[in-house]
Length: 276
Image 1 (cartoon, rainbow, N blue to C red):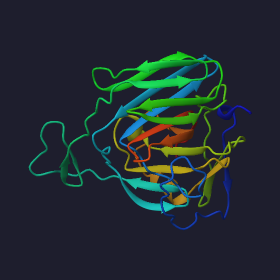
Image 2 (image 1 turned 180 degrees about the vertical axis):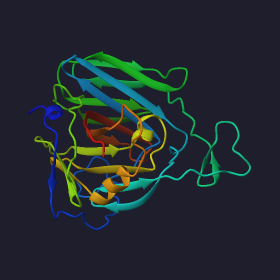
Image 3 (image 1 turned 135 degrees about the horizontal axis):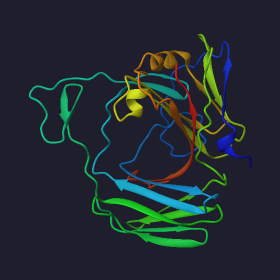
């Protein structure tokens, strides 16, 4: 396979307006031609770095869904536009609660699910939660293949990617797009894998919540169409700070427990640069 991280580029296709809204498909990691924006309270992510011969695991198990500061305002094709407006709560929120849409909400707590039994080609490890109930492990890794995690008697399995350098940023830009949709393309599509894209403005890059955020999810076909109207909304955000404009593209494979409580994903992470 060619190097995924060196092959991403952006092209512009005139007259390729987005399709009508599509329903969310609940099938995790499938090749179904619908976006899958579902999330599990318990999530484990595995990343492999063949150049460094390292495999890493990180995970957490929440006692409830993650807080959503932004709300979905529109969906076109495989992408949705998330928008956020600050609000005030009366009385003011206490402790670590935050005000979202006029209501005080608490962050979910992290749960201790006991040890994880993690295995990969050529190795295995028991991963214990740390003092904050987060899970992390790292080990030597020399070849891609199946990775498994056993949590509370449930076994989840995914394939790792064979990309030799899954983490990179290429300084790519979207320019002179006018009213056309943008097309993000890469020259290696992997059958059975899916991709996620997230684009945020400078506020989001510096730990805040973007006024507008683009989120896309699709089968890995080698390209994603980003609606021009969504990019217009992103352009209207805050771009007054430095060190921002890098956006994340993830190729992933996943498996989930039958009850949807636990989810395992293997990630190949890439990115590109865009500022209006």
